[in-house]
Amino acid sequence: MKIKSNVILILLSIAILVACVLPVILNENAAISFNSASPIVFGICSSIYAIIAFMNKEQGNLFVLGRNKLFIAFLRSQSDDKPNTDSDEYKNEFALSAFIFCASIPLYIPLAFFAKNFYTALSSALSVTILRILFTFILVLIPRIIKNMQEKKQGRIKDEADRKEQERRESMGKWK
Image (cartoon, rainbow, N blue to C red; front, side, top):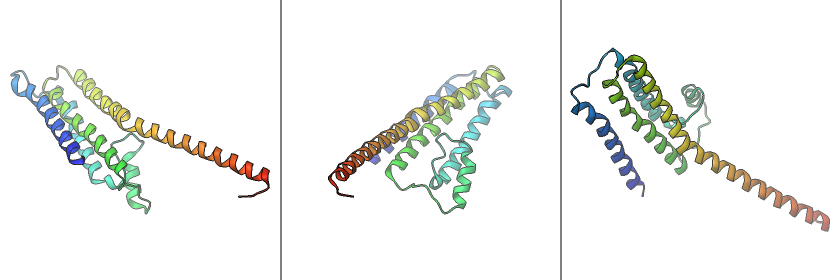
């Protein structure tokens, strides 16, 4: 099952890359200009960040939202407390968030080649970045939040059942 999902992710990545490069190849009006600077910089910075995230995946998932992610990863690399990166849940979450992040990088290619003016290119590059964050939030973080809420609810139900059982035992004169 794991190999099948990896093959699907690889094929989807290739399809996205081809879909982004094909219009550039087929259109003779595609060109790099000064207006292309912002999508190129966003693409390069995203690629560098992806490399850093893959190199530090043992320190935690740097693809998900968080404040000062690189700084926190650096601090974790210096401490003895390591997050649980061996679980299947973490590996699946990392793979999905890495796919979302890396699959969005080729979207900067047509933005760079078809930039009409600087501000349009900049707003388009920012839009891709914001959509990437939004998709990561929806597909990775919301299921984690829902799972944590369900676990807390189950814990409260169990605690309430334990409390009622203790009250019943106390009323009968037995102590736990």
